[in-house]
Length: 210
Length: 210
DNA sequence: CGAACGCTTGAGCAAATTCAAGTGCGGTGG
DNA sequence: CCACCGCACTTGAATTTGCTCAAGCGTTCG
Image (cartoon, rainbow over all chains, first blue to last red; front, side, top):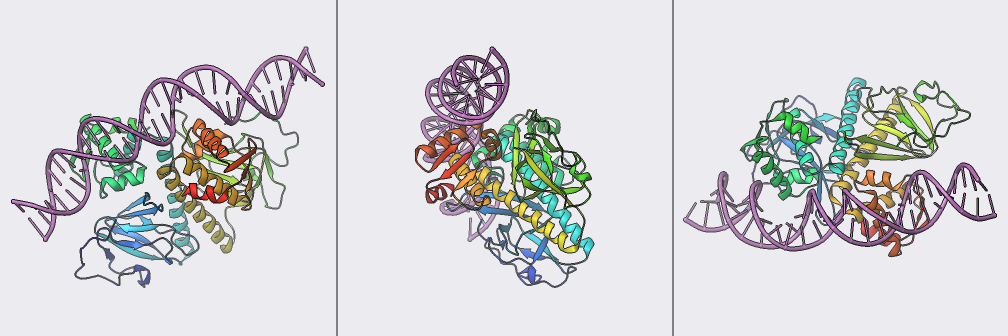
């Protein structure tokens, strides 16, 4: 949640990608936990994740956090209205971003539109998970989604912490941990390490997600 | 959830607004509970609500339902990707819709884009409510939102049933009812009728929503 | 080696759900 | 006009799910 103490020895580019002129430059680096933008800040560009992962979230006054989405390598984020960010965005691990120009050709605009709409559909699908599914179903749906977005294999990396997963799924960190333990105990998944996971019984996992 | 037995004596227009040619025609009527479109159907237009109200939702295999949004008079809905609907939409009460052309001038496209992005922001804000707030906070946030969308007065109509409200907020109908009863008992709201509500203590309601 | 951090696990608790009766209102028919 | 019926809503009691609080574990880093 707070910026990590890492100091990037050789910043590739100016610290603010919005100021970056063209597209074919090296990506801007963000340290683990570093803020990309804050709610209320002005926005003039979109970002594509080159490597690493990003979390988008909102906060309540008392500190409760809801992560609305994660963005992995290759994905685009930063859609906003009125030229102002409505969410916070920060890098999860060491992350490289490339700014995309807001304006451009008609085809490019259409592509952005399509991207924004996919984002909308995804967001509303996630609402179904958070609003109407129990803890096991939420975790199962999350793991399936993460797998699909990492090439559809049954091996995946979870770049985010358990707290992040909880704040994404509307659960506490303890519940996330308990459900993962239970899935492990049942032989549905194997945790190669804390952040690296193999699905041993994909069919079973899919059944749990429904 | 199912189409009401009302038969509209004189349909203003063909039953499918997507087929409607221009914009300046009388609106297409939908009976209470009537389906506007289904998940998986092809889409080629957007809709503006002229009067009445619309619910957009998704279903789980076992019948659990999550309403992702309500649309009231003046609001636009129907944004989708790949030309296919990802949700079900139906009329809540007697509802009039006007189809908007998908294509058009650049300014019109920009307006649609802005509308879609507002929709995205709204959806992600709602996720915070469903994912991280308790029953009282959810109902309070819902009432405030409904009031704002009906002119910002403290008097409002709730066109939807308690079941709809529950399916929107991720609560059961009983919990919705209990919370409304409690707000009434505390003098925060007054229920003129089941579907008509007055906020007596707006400040208190706002405090509860946070 | 010790401290810090992220994660796991357990026990008790609270909030919301489930199950089960009621209540009231609008509409229909006698 | 009034009684009845159906439906949406309300209310209560018991249950369950996930949360809170608390302790312990393991890995990493200074």
